[in-house]
Image (cartoon, rainbow, N blue to C red; front, side, top):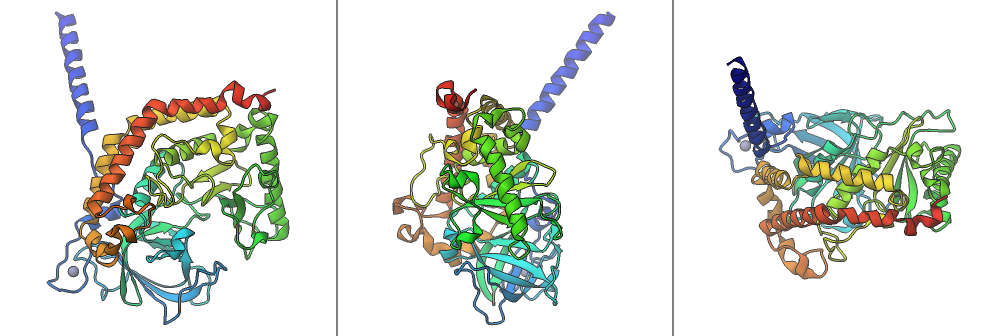
Length: 473
Ligand SMILES: [Zn+2]
């Protein structure tokens, strides 16, 4: 009798447990940050015809100066910035600002530099020009910010979506918030305030601060197209041996503080690692990649960028950071070209890119690395990170959060829905409505995910004995 009761209780317990587990996987909630929750319900309390939004308003006052940037010489202008971010009653341009600061600004971006809707780099400064670190829209205190204006990305949400997904996968990835922008009183549409890819706490690149007395330093470098000023590029091993066509540039310490001795230290440090990576030693215990880089960081970087087919990642706008006492880490940046929005050509969902990218071509030559990629991917596909149902629901939630800000944005930029005014080539690839753009994004996620579920395993070919023989001892 006693046994029977125990058996019945255990069975009941298991049934309840299964039920709980099941409801858990079906339920989807908007993964908003605390401040986004109140903004979602921030309803206008006035009956005005003036501009009103639930999103924070950013205003830039240039004081009648032209904004520089296209010359790519780092020139900035001093401007006045206001950020209006009310907890309730909506945000209006005449409301009291939460943040008022001066800022040195310029346009930023590569191909996006020439888009009609501009991106901005903001450095908040005090009156005397020293840095002014402030908490912006609920994000960690800092003085360096990027205002990214989604333009090529007609869904407006790709950077927001993939930065937030990356934050669930990696130690650090950019934090960001949607807002609406005015420059000298002109409405510029929906923008994303993003943590600039710099040194900092939490979601920025966590490395120790450079001491100008030292001839060594923690550092951030970026793989990119060659700089117009060739002196800015490093002459590292993978470049001078023609192993990589991407050029490296030092991002931290910044240009104005970077001494020749520190630049040489960074150049030598990277070359020493690359010599081992592109040799018999690539997987050795003593000199190999595991000793020099954070394998998880490279695994996750590859997964998120292959999943989204963000084809420039790994060779352009590719940030790598290393603490003086630590290993190399990757930092995600820019998903505008992702999900088949590469300007020059259609990206087929059955292509792989990373076996062609600097450093990664050697990592993929090792079976252990490939194995880590595959098992991590399978895990992420099962949970609320890369699971198909989760991603599709998350997209709907983000669009729901944006509300009528999407319409306001396309009142200014909607002309790009005329296919011949779109940026993708051939023109027939350009979506003709917001709904079509979102549908394209969802279709890409479904197709790419299902392809990888079946065929990601084929990346094992890059570490096949016949391919890597020349590197094996
Ligand atoms: Zn209002």
